[in-house]
Length: 115
Image (cartoon, rainbow, N blue to C red):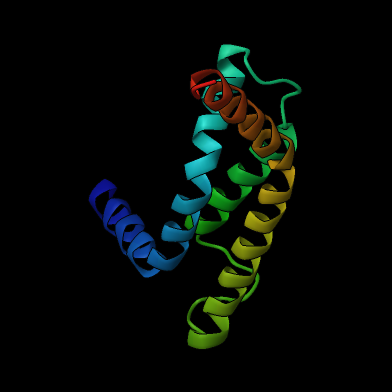
């Protein structure tokens, strides 16, 4: 039974490769932000971004969708729309972190530039 569920999960993730790549791009900023939050370097904590990322990952692997996947084209469209919507919301929630990171990078660059 465990072998069957592992195979099922692998197959489901493989069919959602597009979403995994998109989440990977979102994680390029999300993971450094998580590290900075855990270190205590970045505050306030964007809890909504953490929650939405958990929802996006859960929806990706859930066997239940709003529109079943056996409806081939339409079944994949709901996945695309929901994941894209969540990633867009995550990106909005990370705007404060992006500004903070840019400020840190700019101040570091100005200290290293020749005067």
